[in-house]
Length: 201
Image (tube, rainbow, N blue to C red; front, side, top):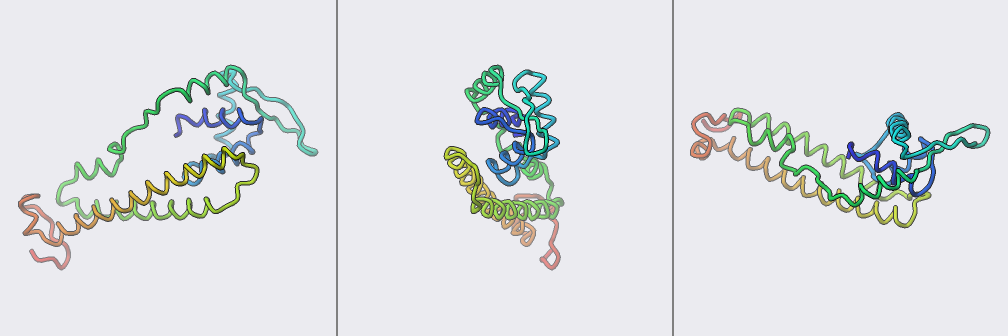
């Protein structure tokens, strides 16, 4: 997502001109928890887009305060269109750090894996709660399409988080079983299976 943030900004500006703060608010409302962007990042991105001539600043007034609104240029419209037409090439989930740790861990590292799993489970629960609360809020000023898109994003993210929690629970149970039953596990792991506190040696 980080590499594509500039296109998210372009997409928002293609709908209507906005100043930096408004873009940050609209970004958070559209994409939800976990994808937040701060005003500093937005203004840095706008400067980059302005250098590329994909956006242009338009001086304006908001009450008694002067503000600079940005609008997308023809070059920005072309860049956005090319990006939207490009196939998605997101990295497969097998590149996650937890997967690497699981594949490379040794039997004596099992307890560390359980700690990583517990942290990942808590993170998934927190994100699921944030998405549930976020999806219940009214999206002021959102277009019908933005609300439609946000509903789909929320549904996809919550489905992934539920699946993630289910997989983590299964992995934790299997690792705990190996720790609590070292005799049964030696065929799989060898003789260096760490006995858990209170488990039979």
